[in-house]
Length: 158
Image (cartoon, rainbow, N blue to C red; front, top):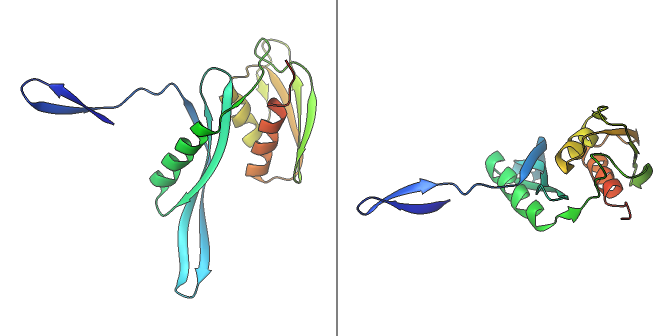
């Protein structure tokens, strides 16, 4: 937020327009048991795209949902990685493993749209792809599947 002068000494708030596209993957309640009892916090998982072929994934925990989302977006903007988009799809098929999650990403013809599910679909949409076929194998963990997808789309050679 910033201030903008309006008239005689009056100040109005205005928001800076952001050219980042943001997608919330998950909000989770997480607890930690301590000697003082259970401590509840919220974890936000965010995917950010800048519109120029760069995408990032970040998670953050906080006592408040809004703070967790804001901090995840701020940190994701600092860790953008470049993806390769070839006419709205991926250049060639690739299979990537990240921990227990495996993701296969395959190019599709124009008009196919994104055929994927869950976190893989959201990451591909935010990354700017239009026509992609994707399949996840192994783990159903949201964060690991999202990281495997980002690893897959950043592995293409130009």
